[in-house]
Image (tube, rainbow, N blue to C red; front, side, top):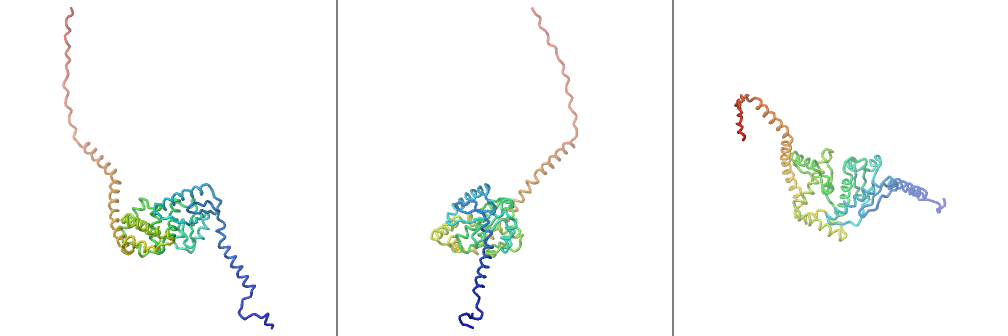
Length: 327
């Protein structure tokens, strides 16, 4: 055989290499196809909103409200990222399920999620969500915000800031946190720094405990909280993300384990507050029934009193005045 036309044993034919590249390009196109199916709704100062349906006025109004909320949050923390987060509204329930498959189990049951690898937020459409839709978007935005500013932020800080700062802890959920702190006072924030609870029944407690931990950071140590965000802002202006543990220790002067221990004791004390609230609620709930019982007993006592004879009234005699003589 002519050496010019010979091919080393094991070498891949040229046509097969081209075929392999073509298959890879087709596969990549299929994977990216859903992204090109999204319609741009609005490019706002802090986010870019897309939808897999043609945009409507409701989507644009939502974008305006979200811009206001994000602006308030950035002013609150004093750090202003240059980048914009991409938000994709998914109107198809099946498509959302496909996007959430293969991720954490908690994501599959969610209404929205933030993808750290893509730096993007995916959310169901408003008609599929029962909770406050704007708060859900703010919640996911805070995940992106923390990812932009920190290295190694623990999961409890992610979920705590997202839940607390988006006002998703109402009075009823606060009572649940107090009750759980009384029933199960052992805090698990440190152990679950990078992993969600396995059982779905524990998810709500984890979210609430994380939110209360973020609130505890702010309310219990206000000066440290301010210094914490000043360090974050200084690092970001220098073009760097700050390591969470460094920012925390340098601001609070305690380790994360010590903070975890203190917060656990704080949660246990908060649990006793639930007993006070529950007792007062019980009193107010029973008060109408107590008043009815008292009124009934009072009527019964009055009915059992003996009848007393009435005093006879004296007869009145009318005297006819004398008519004076007229002259």
